[in-house]
Length: 437
Image 1 (cartoon, rainbow, N blue to C red):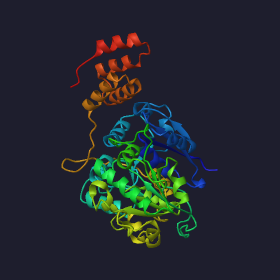
Image 2: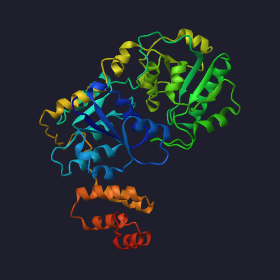
Image 3: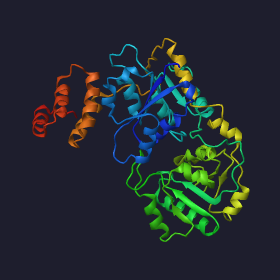
Image 4: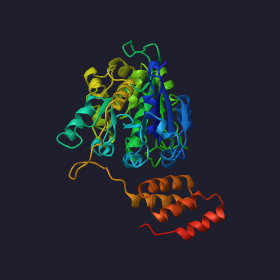
C-alpha cells in the first residue's frame, strides 16, 4: 500500500469547518489521512465538531499553537479556511518557520462566493494552490490577475458537490412527502423588516397549502454562533411577526441533509444549500421576492431558471407542478457537476510537490493584502489579555515572536501569559505592560 497523504485542514467558524468537511470526499485509493483543527470559539455547533471528528483526527488549537506544533512539518499539505486577513497572516507567519521541507499551503472559499470576490482573492494570493468552485470563479480570477505578478497563481476547481448524496441524474422524488425546506441565512436578507416579510411570506404560503409542510431550517440554534451575527434569531422573528404559526409551518433543527433527503422542494434566498438540495434529490428554488439584490447575494442565482416569487404563488402544489430543474448550463458555469471533484485537489497537490515552487512576490500597485501587521497583532494580543483569554493571547504572542524574535517586551508578555500561577501572572502582566496604541 502506498504511503498516506497527510492533510491538515484549519477552520475558525462553522462555515469554514463545513467547507473543510465538503472537501473530505476523497476516494480510498488516495489514502488521505485527515486532521481538522477547529480553532476554539464560543458557540461553534457541537454537531459540526462531531462530524469533523468522524473524518479523522480533531485538533482544537489556536493559530499560534498550530504554528508551533511539533508535528506540523509532517503534513504533506495544509488547507487554511480562515476569515479575512487571517488567511494571509497564516501564510506569512508559516513562511517564517524554520522548516526545511515545508508542507504545501492551499486555501479556498466556504461555498458560493456571493460578494467581495476581489477582496477575498486579495487575501489568498500567494498560496501554493487556491481552490475555486468552477468556471465562474476561474473567469473572474483571470480577469483580475491578467498582466499582474500573480498571473500564474496555481488554482484547482473542486466544484460545488459538497455532499455524497444520490445520483442527481436519477428522477427527483415525487413519492416524497409534500414538504418544503427553507434554508435560512443569518444575514440574507439582513434588514429586520425584510426578514419579517420573509417569515410572513412563508407562513402565508403554508396557509394556502394545507396539504404541505414548510420547515424553516435555522442556520444556527439560539445558543450557537457563526461568522455573521444577526440582531434577532429567526425563532424570535417568527414569534414577533406571526405569533402563532400555522400548524404546517415550523422551525426544524435537524441536520439539513436529513431534511433535504425527505423533502420534495427546497427554497432559499442565496444559500449554498441550493446545491446540497440537488445532491439529495430535492428540487431547489430561489426566493425572488426581494429582487435581484447583490446585498442579498440573490443576483448570483439569476440565471438558475428556478427564480420564483413565493408571495405570488397560488400554492405549493402549483409550484411543485411548475418547478423544473436548474438550468444545466448555469450549473456548469457555477461549478456543479461531475467534472469537478475534491480528489482533484489531492492530485494537484501531488503534482505541485514534484515541482520547485518559487513564491510570488507582490509588487506595489497590484491588488494584494500581503502584509501582516505586527502592531495590529500586538493590539489583538492585549485585547485577549484583557478578556483573560490566555490561550488566544499565547497564540498571538507566539505568532509575534516568529515575526520579531528579538523583541524583548513581546517575549516578556508571552512569559507572563504562560504563567499558570494567577497571582504571579497578574504581577508579571503589570510589570511588562506597554501601550501598543
